[in-house]
Image (cartoon, rainbow, N blue to C red; front, side):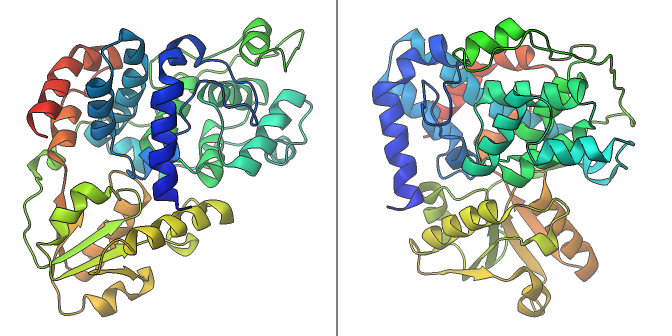
Amino acid sequence: MTLFKDALEERDFFLENKIKNYEKLRNFDYGPKNEGSVSKLSPYISHRILLEYELIEEIKDKFQSIKTNKFIEEIYWRIYWKGWMENRPGVWSDFISEEIPEYDYETYENAVNGNSKLDFFNSWVHELKTYNYLHNHTRMWFASTWIFNLGLPWQLGATFFFKYLFDGDAASNLLSWRWVAGLQTKGKQYLFSPANLKKFSNNRFNVDKINNKQIFFEESNQISFEDEIYKSNMEPKSETLILFENDLHVTTLKNIFRNYKNVFIILLGNKQRKIKLSESVLNFKQKIVFEFIKQFDNITQLDPLKLIEIFNDINHLDMIYPGIGENNDFINSFKKLNNKVIFNLVRDQDLFAWKFAKKGFFKFKENIPKINQYIFQNK
């Protein structure tokens, strides 16, 4: 069975069997061998095998019940995080380039190897490394423990998640860690109680006390807004198209590829990444790329080391915009060093939704009806 087929089957299973209980049960983590009510669709959504807007459309077409609204809202959180960072790309560049504050190396080594003094935390580390996934509520517990109990830099925690998560989306992961740390919403840190841990782990973890340190963070740099991305669209501007592994929605890309003489897909290896990924995550991404290529007859996977050679005589390229993150950093560096002109092709739905992500989520949420209307008008 292929990952693309897995994505569709898991989507259908969730919609048919679990979505109506999602709001009531979504915060419960029953353990890695008991899926509970969560969808487990995030690895497919983060690579856009399942496109967020199409998924929202399918749910609204299929259900009239308000019981599905919470899941739709969670999809919109992902869209919001992306838009928030697209409006403030400096947050990513600061994260990727800032020096890490001093920390206790022994504590760090024990933490990443699941040898801390906290059994519940060790369990999560082993689960993450084994399954390349953690329940969303557990990710919040994990980040809070990492920062406020173990006293480790939040940046190293976010990097640890990027290394092992199949769904390590740049915006969702980075901004969620910032939110737990109290940077994303100023003055609002995420701390949890023993009662919360016991209840929502279904009594798997029972501790008397959570020992949190008094730690407060401030932005090291002022966050500025940028609007360059809104000058983009989906109109072809050259004969050559490039894309990366985090936007592989077959249905919409199929029509776009017909406009190009050559289409190349790029998968960065660890030599091209500042954040090194685990072998399991790289293998997952490569499998997705292989399966994607098989569905077309005009796509070639391009070795990142051969960009200069392949595009020696090509000065203008179109690119399915990969979003703020490692892929975008890589191509921007190539563009500047080799004097290439690269046009970002950005989905209309993204551009429409992102413009509402300049403040907090609740301001964004007020505009979800407008975004829904836009999605349905532009099928």
